[in-house]
Image (cartoon, rainbow, N blue to C red):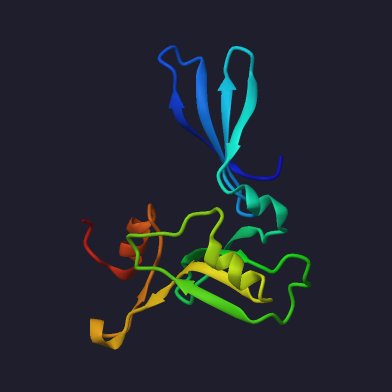
Amino acid sequence: MPDGDFTVDSRSRSDARWIVTYTVSDGPIAYYLYERPARQATLLFVRRPKLTEYRLARMEPVEFPARDGLRLYGYLTLPPGREPRNLPLVLLVHGGPWARDVWGYDRDVQWLAHRVRGAAGELPRVHRVREGLPQRRRPRVGRQDADRRARRLPSR
C-alpha cells in the first residue's frame, strides 16, 4: 500500500468491526471494513473511482527555518514524472495561525501540479493593508505557544 493515513470512522458496539478510511495525497479516499478478530480488511468502495485512472502528484511535508529562527511547516506538491528543478511555484496561503491545511488529496493542488507547476500550501500569510499593518503570521495549529513566546504575546 502507498503511504497514507488510516482513520477509524465507525465501530460496532462489540468493537469487533470497524469502518476505516484510507487517505493518500495522490488518489481517492478508500473505505474498508476491518474485522478485528481476523485482522482482515475488505475494500468497501473508493470515493472517487475515476481518480484511480490518473497519475496524481504526491503531497510531501516540508519545513525550513524562518528569518527569526523558528521553523515553518507546509506541504509541497510537485508535478509527477518531472525533474523538480526550475519549476514555477504557486504558493497557496491560508487564513492565519488558527487554521491549517491538511495532508491529503486536494483537487486545486492537483490541477496546478498537472500544469507543470509546484504548489506549496500552509506557508506564512501576509495580511492585506486594509487589515492593518502587514505582518507575518505563523500557520501552526498546535504550535501557537512557541509562536506567542517568539513574538512576546500573552497566552490565551
